[in-house]
Image (cartoon, rainbow, N blue to C red; front, side, top):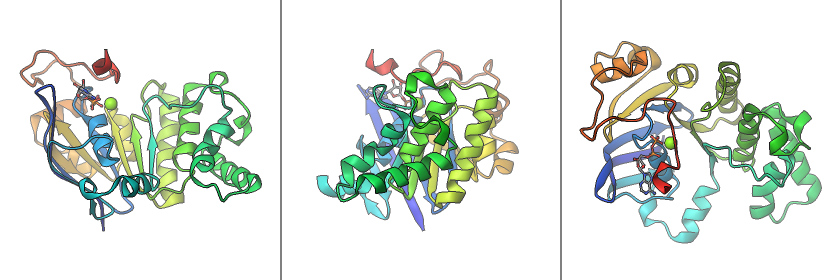
Length: 268
Ligand SMILES: Nc1ncnc2c1ncn2[C@@H]1O[C@H](COP(=O)(O)OP(=O)(O)O)[C@@H](O)[C@H]1O
Ligand SMILES: [Mg+2]
């Protein structure tokens, strides 16, 4: 079954097109990685899947339903079945790791007793190997550990779809490797359908069942890692070589290079 379908999705901000006909399906149980440079609309794509943004044109189907047709209540219910690992981790600094992970349960599972919540939190922290750090505050742990704690929180409601926004950004290669492994393991342990967006090619190869490249508002290539590696499209070839010197442009002047990611640029 196709869990998520983006069908000719268009989105512009202040007249500037960001998504210009994105068409993509994500199959049940697969880990699909969307690659693309900073500012190409990867985070915007994720926000369409959880209904934080609505397309100007086109359709988004999740769990077989067109999310534009869902009532507010149905949309909220759908979001509870989707885990979202935010780019910045988004832990609350005044809560411990365990309290952060417990938060969605406290908010949405009022029937659970404290002991049951503690058991579920332990189980999820164990998956991400963060049990020893459960009583630490976010400021006391490394960036990689913050990502892991964020992942434990993202899976605490047993989502059947997990979305990851740049899970390795800002991490050193060793930490990135650990997170890549963890994304794979999470898929094996939970059986979830996963969508990862990243500009980190090494991470894409390590994680993906399939890779899709977003460029100038469209998916210009999609296939297995081996197929993408062999892709004849010069834009894809250039991106996977990590070569920033070539002709990549959308006609609006220079683009940010990989690593210059700034998710808040549009808020400035
Ligand atoms: N809420 C918004 N309002 C206006 N512009 C936005 C908004 N969200 C994203 N954008 C713009 O859309 C483009 C794609 O952003 P984004 O999806 O965050 O890129 P990335 O691929 O790095 O995740 C950027 O030019 C960004 O400034
Ligand atoms: Mg982003």
